[in-house]
Image 1 (tube, helix red, strand yellow):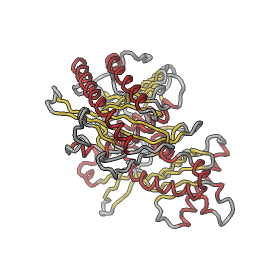
Image 2 (cartoon, helix red, strand yellow; image 1 turned 90 degrees about the vertical axis):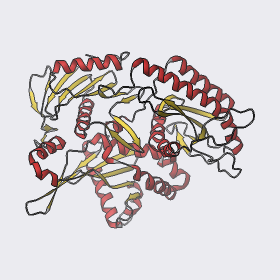
Image 3 (spheres, one colour; image 1 turned 90 degrees about the horizontal axis):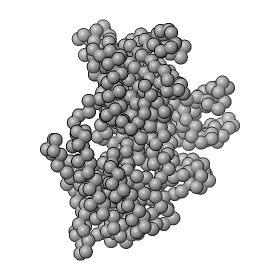
Image 4 (spheres, one colour; image 1 turned 60 degrees about the vertical axis):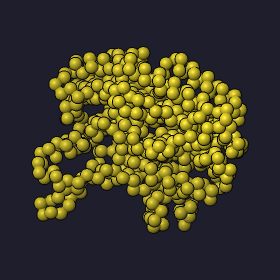
Length: 533
């Protein structure tokens, strides 16, 4: 294991290496001494009243396109290479020119690295990211660098592009997510080609990405986009067994169900899917489907779908996908189709999401909070669910899930009171386990669809990303401690496929005291996980 310390984000020392290195030099080139957000903050502080004239513009999506160089190999056929281009209003020749430039960059970099050609291209004004998810199918995302607009002495605006603010790993991960989300709902590019040729593939790409690109919030992308992890709900053994028993009963009663996933309060408890499939389905559920249904619940419209029926418990369950009203004989039973195990068995499934919301009174804040349990039932796409099936599922799942959700809520509150975890956490941290994709963050507060709100300054999030980039360059375990210019301490630990990032607001602490604080955090939050000292 190795240790590094960074002070003021300008110098670091690696134990055992016996030398200091100026951290302004990375990858053989020197960066501006006051580059990045830390430099911006320092410059703004010194500028006094002049800083008020500054305008900041976050990164923005300039263009996004998908092409295949094999589809237009001859001169005059270049337009055939382009399968999708955003924004569509761009003139045809400019599209062809931009795609041709990307093709040339890929070919040029392939000379030096045949197996891993271009991943990103840095320019003053923007950054281009490349991804080849399937052979010869290239996805390119062009992101404008953040901008600071200042007023010159003669009153004219002066634009400064913050070239070093974007982290390659973050936005490369966002581009990979774009493909994964497309594949979840449409299958692979190659399968579309087999089903209906280039025409069908173009139609699917247009239909999906026209809507999906509008949900990208590039200004709030960070370390969690690199991990693409899953937040797991903490449970005691007895409650977990109750859930396992519930799932077994449901799969036995509803024999056409192929896979099941159980979530509580947007956190995963159980899944029958493969990890990579569940990872992208989880992202869809928590950033798109669930947030879309929060407003009706808060407005009090999350009442039973139908009145209490004889011999049936009244419950508060409803379909998030499928029929809106089970009493309507004309109700449409349309469920989204998803594709899983695309590398081998290539399964097409209907996704049925059923949710129950219960309320509890918090003893700490003395207000009522809504807790929800959601079950995802996946059935073979060759079977079309009928309204009768939906009514049967509602009558079987609804009452039992309502009782189970209340039990989980009660047990969770007991555990919180015992541990005292309702209080504001003393530490800000992000934890990720590469083996089971488990992630935990006290930094992020996901309140709105697709937007990741954080409780710390963007400068500190940038440092977390820099530490993560350092971790990927070495295989062995490592620890990095940073003293930021804002006097925060930032610690990164990499040990046995696990990563932990901690932010401490202890201005006068020294390295030994910071190390002790991190040990306390590991003892309280991760007492059953071994982190190398």
